[in-house]
Length: 277
Image 1 (cartoon, helix red, strand yellow):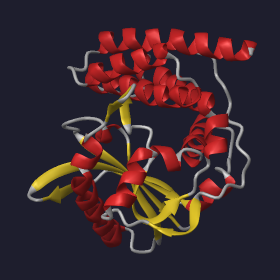
Image 2 (cartoon, rainbow, N blue to C red; image 1 turned 180 degrees about the vertical axis):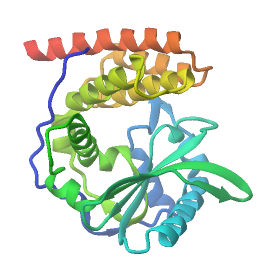
Image 3 (cartoon, rainbow, N blue to C red; image 1 turned 30 degrees about the vertical axis):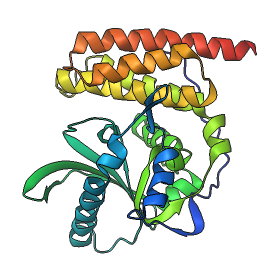
Image 4 (cartoon, rainbow, N blue to C red; image 1 turned 90 degrees about the vertical axis):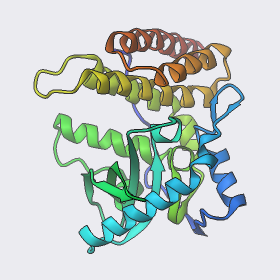
């Protein structure tokens, strides 16, 4: 178990720009969206060229997601559809993750296989009501599940502008102050979650070793984005580079565990250093 740092978020939040609608097909607007994203650079100054290279794939797949939502969730009003996750940094991702923000306070996950140009593609669609992000998740009880749902909302609400690639609907507002203030809470949440779900062997449900290995790496890689946002330390970028190349390799559980342990030591050192400042 690694040191846990709680989120400190000043709800209610505004998450949408008051007037701006996304036009993802506009080259200048798309460039601005990519430049603000945490995966704009893979590590150091190495540019992530996959963002622009795959931009039309993201857009077309987003259209298929919207069509799927219209058929299966016709009662929901979608305010924004965005792409996030490891599919923005991997050459051949096995699936794509989308966030559909709707009216209300719905909290649901769907995992359809969609057809794009004759190819079947696995997708995860996280369907969340905007009220969750404005006021924070309303805990109905003190269960572990309820606490995890609260953490999902907290870590997403403050990082939409930087973590997600908006494809349709309203653009996100820049919550940079909340984002930076909670950077190490983001890291804490990601790696403790990865430790509990993927590092430790779960007895109550089966997760393939390859998936456990990949999930540990992707969460550590994302965590380096938040560390790098507040600290330009060379060691962080070296760690980020090591994780990135591990993501391009075969996913082996023991190798991922060793990288996770190395990252955990760096995390503990960094929060100890910040505590002394």
